[in-house]
Length: 171
Image (cartoon, rainbow, N blue to C red; front, side, top):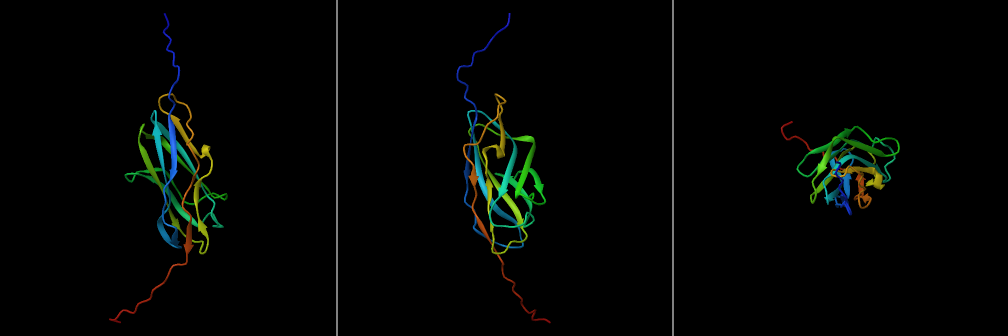
């Protein structure tokens, strides 16, 4: 005899996305700049995060104005690959393999770090533009989960910086 289980109202996982404010100014030539941050909170069931696509849509002209872009979660764990540069449309795709698990009821913070190579007097702004730019699965029911909202991160102005020359008194 075959047994059937009836599920009347499964509580599919939810994923709540929110922007976290970061600095709004950076000198060109700064390595490892915190260029944006957001949180993801799983509820009802654990969520398996497999891909995040970020879009840089500030006024930076070149996809090479930022380099070595990486995502680091709470506790310092890097998720996905380090991207040498963005693609020509300003997008960067981070793939988590294996998927990164966010337990139900847990909020993680995802920090975006990048070397700001160039782009003086322009703006750097990372976003999760579309809900499909975060690819996630409900671990229990193995169905796709969309985040609650797109995320517009803090815009940073790229400054020229300063050069200080000091004379060594011993020379």
